[in-house]
Length: 472
Ligand code: IFM
Image 1: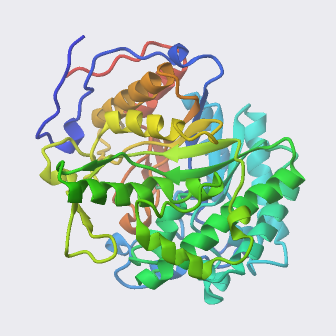
Image 2: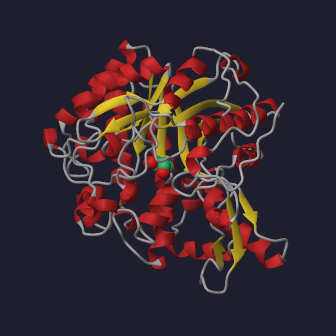
């Protein structure tokens, strides 16, 4: 087997690190293959059918928040084009489709009044999936909090746990007869860190004082959402999706090793451990002890929920070092672009070995029943030329990450599914439309879709053709 070393390369020139052919059959016949999306990133139609503003609508209207002044008022117009887009999912050969529900379409006041037009839309979407023999997987919350709830404090206000429970119950009652797989929260760490601490994401709140209450209310809500779904839908399979990355210390110094443990506590342990009954990971990051100020009697129990599966969302590895200049965390990341490693268009390290290591790390938790990769993918600077997008870098990325998933599976990790991120180029949050993650290229002026080379390769792989990586 030939081994390719990808040093000092232009991001789009990434090539597979091994030439091992992959085949779908290697993962076993029950392994689930899907593609993941999120409502706000694709739907558009923000003013249609009684939807109210979410925090991202308001954030995007502010100057300088989203690259190039982009907004998601139209996004991919998936709200109107969902039928043809689901046909593309089918054409690509995915059998599962993960999408999120827009809270402000379903409950425009955040709680109370149900907007039937919003419910009807998701009913049509689910029914279309079923008609195409694609299994719908619902994410309840993928970052688009109704603005009306943000005005009442959003995730800083403990009442959000009740509001979220009500929303979960409305969704379970509306869609639970046809949807078996549910994901409660998507990447709560991004909400707490980017949305309420650094302010890079909506709602744009800044300040470390927000971090702990927001973490605690998200952690309570993930468990409460799980309980609501389980009570109303006893046969559902309920999961939660968290971001995770292998964390590597920059040196073997005691200070760098401790810094890596703190980063690991935040990036990987913060939301899973309270649910497993292990509490917050204060051992590695003593600052987290301050969360007790927001805890009430009985909360340790309320934080627990026995999820059927944990969704892991892995894109890159990180290297960290101790820093005196960063109070609270006392660490800084060593950017991949300074480390002579291959990166994607967003400067994220391409690290298939990191995918392997993180799967092994999560497998060690006794209370974890099953793991699913609920997102993995890469942004590259794709160009549409003569009706084609030759995104060989993305093909190679998928090849190497899938190889790593297979290796982990063969080494005993109970991983049962994989979702590519994502179907369509879309609104990539603060990056706007500048970061293209899709297997399908979108011309945002015409809304025309073009399946990229990576999409065609994935389709071949899912048809059980041996998946040879491109070699040049
Ligand atoms: O686009 C996002 C998604 O919404 C959450 N996980 C990471 C993706 C890529 O940044």
